[in-house]
Structures are given as structure tokens and as C-alpha cells.
Image (cartoon, rainbow, N blue to C red; front, side, top):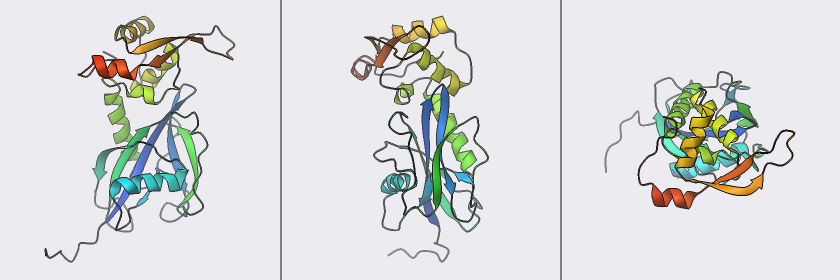
Length: 233
């Protein structure tokens, strides 16, 4: 058996960056911490991994305990292990991110057993304060990832309602990329890829002229495209 060094006492944690899109704003799911250190600070949903627990299992458990969300597909994107990132000792965290539809997922709350989380809230990224630990850095890293990925993979459709307008689609790209896109060129490119299914439906309950609704055609995308696309160039 390998002899472990005496200092082999690091802890692992999981932190989850969950994005949502609502009313033209990109939002992030945060918890308000209920224990020291950083008691009362906002933070990403996260906590320690149990000794007999797989990292992936821990990510799902911690997200559920701190927010009540279950069965969310999350992708591991980075590991943060800087010295001093946790004031109480050496903690290495594995970060995950997810992009989910807010419809049906707006109501979030920690389970009673989640003593570390006082409450969970969706917050616009424009209003996000400095977060506990190095969570602001983790957020920036995740946002950088989706900003790059949204330009060549159809991940934007994971944030939109199942039925959406072209205006909603363009708004999402503009928010993530932080730039204004030409309406005519954007629509022309999106429709030319032939991955949007035009529905025989229009918006309901709006005070302005109702726009056509579309759906993302996953089958057509999988069948016709074996390589990455350029959605914004």
C-alpha cells in the first residue's frame, strides 16, 4: 500500500453555477450562507463532498439540498485549488455549471437539513454582489465558458422556453455576448441553419403585435451538423 504523506488532509467541495434566463435577463442561482465563514454572504450552491461519495453524486446532492432543484444536468468545467481560497484550511473545489429553463424552476428553497443555506434566490448577473470565498472568480470562469460556447454550439436553447420568438433568442445572445446584434443578419443566419421549426402559433397575452413561435429541432441539428456552427460571426 502506498504510504500517504502526513499532510494528506485536504478536503474536496463542489460548487454549482446555475444559469437561467427570464424577462430578457440572464440570472444566476445563489444561496445566502447561514454559517461561518462568510455568514450572511451570497455564494454559489456548494458544500463538502462526503468521504464515500463520488464527485458527480455530491454535485446533485448539494444542489438539491441547497436549492430544492433535482435532476439537473450539470457539466464539470474547472477545478479551483488555490492556497488560501478557504479561510479554515485547504479546500479544493470542483465546479459545475448548468443552463436551465426557469419555467417550473423559479421557486427555489433550501431543504431543512441544509444548515449552511439560509435561502436560495435567482439574481440578475447585473445585480450580483461580491460572493463568498472565490465564488466570484468561479462565476467569471463559468460565464467565460458559456460566452465562448454559445457562439458555436446551440446551448442557448437550454435557457429558452420550449416555444420562443426570434426576438427572445436574439435577446439571449445579446445578453450573454454583451453586444448588439444586427436583427436582420441574426435572423437570416439562424433560419438558414434550418434547425428552427416554425410553429403555427403566436405569442399570447402580449399588448404588442404577437410574434411567431419557434422550437429548436434537436433531431435535425443532430442529423445535419457533425461540426460546430458559427451562430454569431
